[in-house]
Image (cartoon, rainbow, N blue to C red; front, side, top):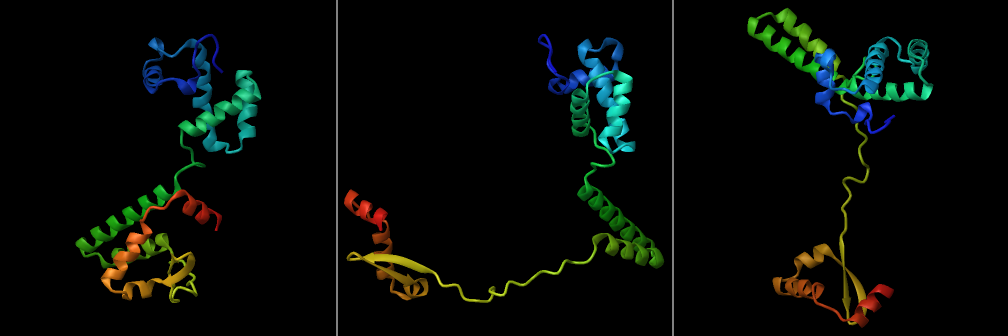
Length: 194
């Protein structure tokens, strides 16, 4: 909560916070924000051991005597700034595991250690998992028919696209010219009403 022209901790530039961490004695961080910074840092450490916010709120209220609303804001800021065991990037972790296994497979193969090579391949297969079964689209093999709507002498006709392709070049050019021909206001109004 900003008071008397001091922006909140979330609005502080990273260099100010970095300077505060490196040299707390000569910190450029405003005095009113240092308490919140200490709370957020401690909350980030507690999140690994106490994934339930209620536990952290109870402990922090006893220590710092601040409101629950402020502590919830501090918890949200800590979760945003610091990764915890409960908010880690699972996809990154799996990719890292797969890369590590590939390096083990390559090293075992180059060393000629067939036992470890086979074991590493088994672990890699377990990491990757089975390919999910795809449901085949029953209409995938059906022929799709495309129609071009042509207005000729006030009548609308749907012409099969394959038939248009089989027309001679001059007829196709005439159709394209008619598609891009300008119309007057009365014809536009009639098209909009149809």
